[in-house]
Length: 75
Length: 249
Image (cartoon, rainbow over all chains, first blue to last red; front, side, top):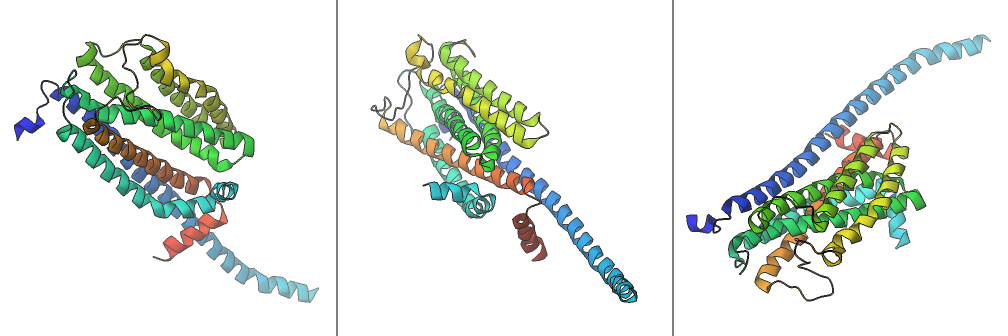
């Protein structure tokens, strides 16, 4: 079995080259995951903020509109 | 062709068309790389001159090829941005520059590791090595220019100009081994000429090449989709998407 992992005196060089490749390959894949999580959390925050604002707008509208219409009637 | 190009130029169409194919691209990349690299590492015969050290070719050649191919794709995007003002192309320049830089770095590092046992040195100021180093520096310069502007459109435009100027380095890299007397060996693969490598060594190299291409495509499209969501977060289609994905849970 050990024979299969011996490359005639070049084992360290081959291991180094393939190790660097694995590092870049895995780092690239992980960076996509990190970027995706960061963007999604940013969007979720924005979604929540928009939701809160739209709820506030609804409640403000509900509170203000009758008064405004009352004012209009008074005029 | 123009119809499809315009369809892809729309951020919403780009996102909805590319998102479903990402898992397929990732799976193909993993499969081709696994088979190609294991085949090259354990079953390909050793080279009669270089012995087992030649097995670094299965990383080095695809990485060097992709570093140049990605630069070509980036220059095409630069043209799309400057001539047709397609905003998505500006986004792609940044994404392709990041991946291209990592491929150029991988090609230089693995080449250096290969050079030590074969040439007796980690580095020489050889035409091929130097022009590849210039390619890496161009990628870094493009990324630096892009991130130094607060105005994204201005940054994208300058990145595009720099990408087109740097295009001159691609033929220099390719023909450097013919134009100058270099320590670096000549091209192993050519589109038109018969390969100078035995079939038992060639097939795993082709598999690794296809694997690298799928990996870079997967990485580029995944990063582009994420970046697109970030840039377009104020647009109606992203908010609709959010409502469906978050509100649906």
